[in-house]
Image 1: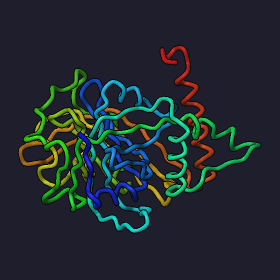
Image 2 (image 1 turned 30 degrees about the horizontal axis):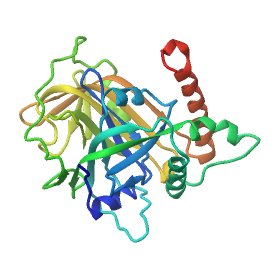
Image 3 (image 1 turned 60 degrees about the horizontal axis):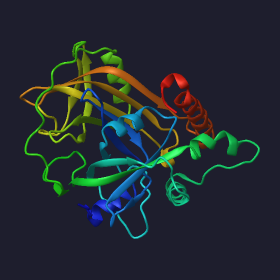
Image 4 (image 1 turned 120 degrees about the vertical axis):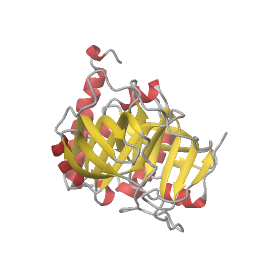
Length: 319
């Protein structure tokens, strides 16, 4: 089944600088991280894409294991609208199955280059330094193409009120609560510190596994924290009742994604019958990019080189 989304959704997909990617972990949790789809999509064929370096994270391994993913287009901040379009403030959630294009064609690379240049600026070149320094960042990248199975659009960016669903019907109810982790559900990192750092960011998003196995990403707001975790608020009905593994993403960015700052956690979400939610962070990660494009590309090149080297190390069991 090919899902062909509406003009309103397509205007959002073509404009957003970044989206929140969610994928499922082997333990049934969800990791949420920021990616840049930069408008790569084909409405007639029913796919949306983003790219990632082989050197960044373990997400490709996780996606290979379970290709069900979600992309949340959650903000028009610094959006770069395509000619003739006017994207609205809707929150659009895309769910589908991801395919990693391990050997991208020249056409794939040309598409990525053109879309990236429109939204993020032209690639940096220089034979004496930049072409070699950014080789892993620009060339050792793989497109990830999502065959869209469901598009959910809330006109309200807080996901309040009615919403439209295209493709697979929205599940009738939430997934049942999960058993607590073996090591316990309490915070394993400093929840108060995580809350302070998270609240300083503009965008707060939470991901969990839905009842049909697809990740779900919704907007939340970080509140106070205590020994039992971080208080989260959201539109009533968005968070499923009970306890479950969940991922939290907070990030901020500037035009062309220069000076972006990202924090992400995995942990335990507990929502009571009144909708009050507490999040206990178990792991923490993130990065801050310099507020200068040249410096940002320098550090991107450094991280990509280190990551690709680690990816190819024999001790990892990968090649």
